[in-house]
Length: 121
Picture 1 (cartoon, rainbow, N blue to C red):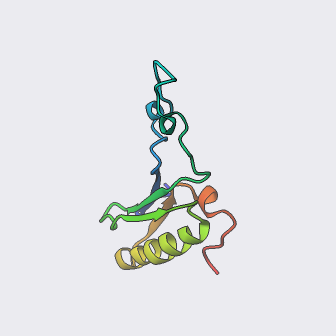
Picture 2: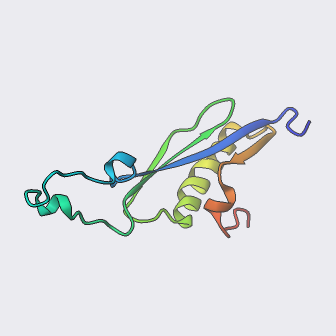
Picture 3: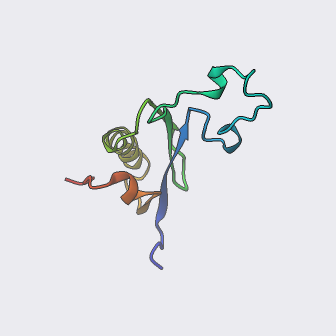
């Protein structure tokens, strides 16, 4: 078996939009009389890139990491992901809790999130 005597370390992140339009029922409004509806209800400004929260946790079979939350006004870039999530948190977590263990790192979206970045120089 490939994972024989190995600990699986899951690296999982989730993005939450803060604009409120990510909920299906909040994307539209319904009115009975358009003449009496205020203009700020009819015409709501929308940013091109809405604010987001990145929530990251590393989950091995032994002990879970602290949850990391990053608020961004724009897109969460690969530099933020590499420096804040991988270098500062994931690698130090593995070094602290799995120094002498055999483990398999199982990132959720390695190609999509990390893009062309090289994690090992």
